[in-house]
Image (cartoon, rainbow, N blue to C red):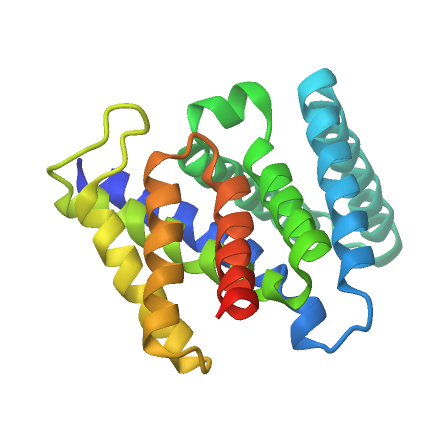
Length: 232
């Protein structure tokens, strides 16, 4: 893998971490009903995904509309303040910035995301929603797992992965690194070492063998945490 490819992989995982961290907002802000939040969020994510899949030209049309509206605003300001040249340069700067952002997005998008929309975001929301509905506040552990395990397993696997699982392409090296990282994080949040190890191992194994880890990771991490508290 080239350095530029790894750079875009890092950017992609930073986006993943940002979005996954956002799923913890109900707990971070102390909202009384996280289940309602995740239900609404899942519906929004699914609706956006449906539009991208069924009406892919919508985004192109919206971009055109935005450019036309922006040009009209700049023209109106230019006529009012006699600043046509300056505003033309500013509009060109906006165009360059927009093209740059689009280029970066294209680089960090996966092939299936270009064809089928951002299904991973929908599955992530759905996984957290299921975790909250089934296991209550243990969903927070699932969110933490989603935030940590997938990015570390992927990036370590890209750099150091030599022993890979054929079905998913995941690596044992990445899985071990994600287990260690999540184990340490759980202990920092007050989970005892043995329980933290069991949760981390179970979740990392699911990430290694799962076809859709964004769905499986939060559910399994929450399930194991709940089971340990219930049975032990």
